Length: 57
Image 1 (cartoon, one colour):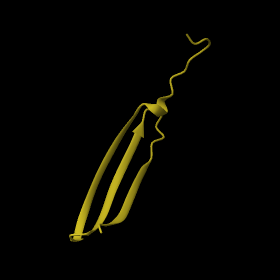
Image 2: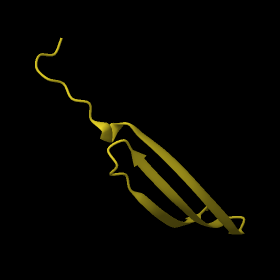
Image 3: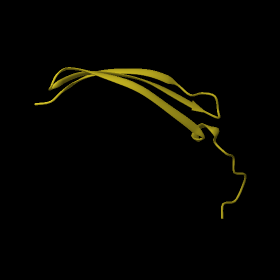
């Protein structure tokens, strides 16, 4: 057992949503982008946009 006062950390009660798209230039090259929404019960979630290039060789 744990002694003392225990407090719930609402930052760990969270939901994540990710939406993305990829465009293939050729059979071995792709441009990718996605948007991520992070929300939590504490109200300090963040949102971010990611982009990248992918190559297969």
